[in-house]
Image (cartoon, rainbow over all chains, first blue to last red; front, top):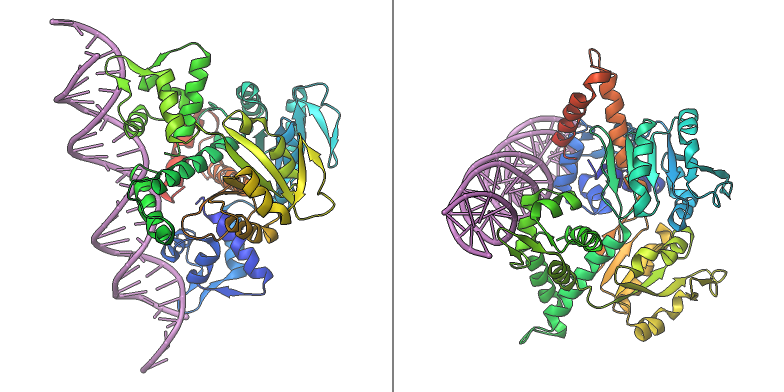
Length: 229
Length: 229
DNA sequence: TAGATTGTTAATCGATTAACAATC
DNA sequence: TAGATTGTTAATCGATTAACAATC
């Protein structure tokens, strides 16, 4: 299911290129996955392909958008207008994919009142009022870690049941509230691990260097997968 | 392995609280995982716990940092200094967790020369020179999708073997180059799916409302897991 | 010794994927 | 009909987790 958005993006690209039909092989390549996996994923949506032909691009876009609930534009509240919050507020990719940033909040009075791409930053205390006015569906937390749990509680209190957390901490929410997390530093740390591993491999006594890079790479990956990467 | 950074963060919090020992149960709770999973993960690093006592916080931090290769500070090159690039360049969370943003690049001459938190934006053509000077270990791509593959190729050409991609597209890199992807719009689309599902559940004919929320929530989750979320 | 907690086993579960029958 | 491609089966693989022996 988490792969449907990736398929959707690939399908939009295909539609823009003028293709109106695509095989599982072709779409899988565009989305960077195995074609059997793609067919299995799509079969969960129902049967929208034609054997011997492929999938109708426009129809599949329609179906995936329906399943993802993208046929209605969802209102997003963004809390924490620091560096990252500023970037998210101005990120064009949200609007172009069915989301509307409907309100910006911060706890710092110095930031309240600032205008960012057409929206005024409100104080977090105004959340209940504005959440009702704008029927906020999704909350995005871009505050420091210390404030994040309080903000999550406030979002839940006004009825938000989907939260995207950028703060580097674990948040607790009630059953029924969906929470996703993006931690930029953790992404780098995972890459750092791979760097470290690759460095260790090339330093191995008797290890091959240069031309044998591919083979080494494969061996290294297998080792990583064994510890659960 | 992808969970080690999360454990590390929890351990740092514990150390700051003055704890010098922690049980698998306690650390698992702080990191938001099952304690059996945590013990299994840690056992892959070697045996650093004491039966009947728990784990030594300082020792475990040391071990995880070693495995993740965080004992050396890694130099990061950031390419694409738009909205998101600005935020990443100023993000304090990188420096505090063992990474140094060593260079900023953009292809737009209008952006070259701008100064952001002490660094001057360079033209992407200067990448080969500066990558060598700063021994860049990790590349971060925050360009529009259309430019991302070219940038990835350029990074690979100067010897970067770890890339974090924020552009909403699939990138192809040679064997041996590690690639991670963060797509902010996809995160929202996944939340949108859950919103859609929850709305469908409450609208079910004969569906329970109000007090039965928890039970509904569980049923909903089970249904989602069945389609592979 | 008694209590606590790790490290590991083994069972379970879900995700992946090759292969192929169904069918356009 | 022949070729192509889906939808599904079944085998495989890895990840999760309860349970417990080892041991501090």
